[in-house]
Length: 393
Image 1 (spheres, one colour):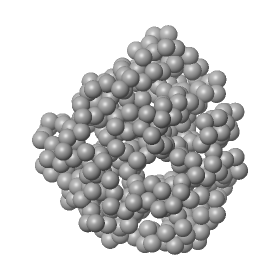
Image 2 (cartoon, rainbow, N blue to C red):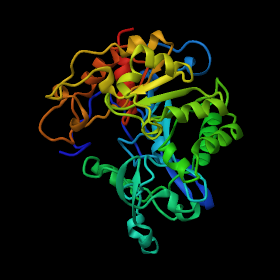
Image 3 (cartoon, rainbow, N blue to C red):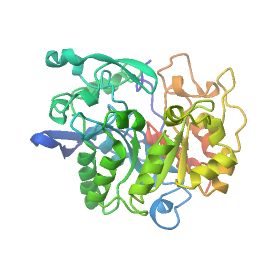
Image 4 (cartoon, helix red, strand yellow):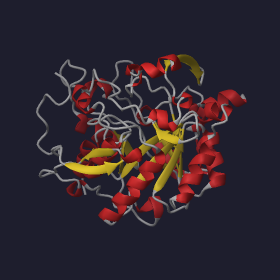
């Protein structure tokens, strides 16, 4: 059974295909997807803990962050995915940024676009296929930094994991790769239409690697943030990176709230590797490490396994002290990533033998939310919103 072939829980929102039009560059009309909300509307699924104060402290808690948009239902990092996430009620929409050859910032999870675009179907770009080492890992494919923006705009986006999300392939070819500036314009348009800010969660991808190519991300990002008035401490945007030095650099350029992303416990951020810094993520999640992060950032984005580790069988173990320790330093926690499919869930919440079928995601979310996290990245923001609404008042 593939995603969507099983019955949906009664309280889930119903996804529709009514169109909200979004316009891209070069006059290309790009159709966004809006949702038809059933009895469990996004408004009814607001978190029980309303935000307090200004800026990011005003967001509902727990905050639901649409991971690469509504990537459980549409090809990731497309205007269609972002639009659907907003229509479903997500509080914040995530973008990952990589540069083009001519210095434009575009929204892709990786600079390798082999699996997320139709570039392999373009004979004019066949010679661009190459092998590169990115953060110490070898990849063979096509890379954004080898294309001008005009060339990238001739490509169309497609589903990254078609074997898992077969139904998302229905939308292959519908949208272009968006620039971050297009996303900022979209967010401003939607904000005016809805009468409220549209929050973004923006990641600099492989910043040390791109700086070595003369394509530094932070200065380009700061320029756009200033141009669109999202450079202040109370601006509706989070800036995030797996490389702490990227966040430190951004802290000198803009006042927007900042989040350090944290991968597996024993791993080292690539900028640490390059600088000879021996610390690992395990060091950064200690009280001393968190105090250091709090000196230049407002939050952390840990993998969920840093909040509740899994044992050798894939079942959840005992929660760590990370939530308590981060809160003691005044840091918010936005862990990643909640997905509905069995293959991504802890073992005790999987249902049946099909890895692509939906499991007991509400049970898993209940367990994670009980730790006191301030938000969660979700490929399925409607699911996360309903799980938040299930929490006792």
